[in-house]
Image 1 (cartoon, one colour):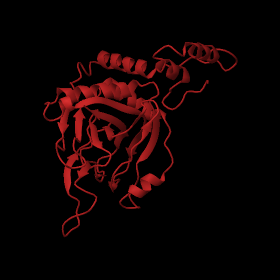
Image 2 (cartoon, one colour):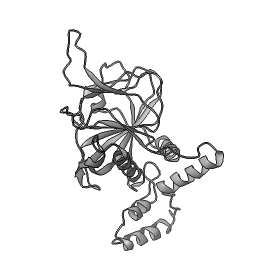
Image 3 (cartoon, one colour):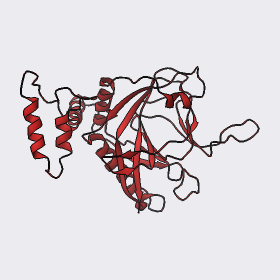
Length: 281
């Protein structure tokens, strides 16, 4: 009750954010009383949205940014392709700098998880370093709502024949993880991703998202592959597209699309990975 979760998320702010139809007003009022009562009384931390707004004011005061560019979509595998990765794309300028700066603060505030089996299975070489993982839940729907709105807007601004009018809904899932490749040499073997079900959205995910938080001048690309089977005499994987990590760039691809993380040269490579539900008309 009195201890904030990872990212300084409180139960009170979460309850308020999810009380859209005002059916839980009594619970919200009870939480307000409990947090300010007794020997462990504490002040409620600011909401994530409030922190984003304050970050924007600070950036404007410093004169660093005057206006954020509109999200710009680039299609990697045509929507009409018969490849399992059809519709894979990336969106530049998906979030304003104020939101990215707040996400930087969130990342620095949450603990690093211990090594897990999933990372070990996907490593190309056991001697290569893994990414450091930090888990975060956007229970206030502050980040997810912005990502969903801006991604749908980028789709709608695209040529209708390529993508635009074919997308009905975009919903980002609240559970996400920060991946930090802080040592050169880190890479991920070719693989596909699994789907997840989000209780808040009530949907099964269709796509993976990667939101890059840092520029990488050399290495660290995400490569979308034709298949998980190497081809040719040298046994190389055929690459359909490579995406360079750029701050504020969002990569989207179907879970079943084969992909790999190319070896990191410029460090750190920091990104947020998660799941998305994309519904076509």
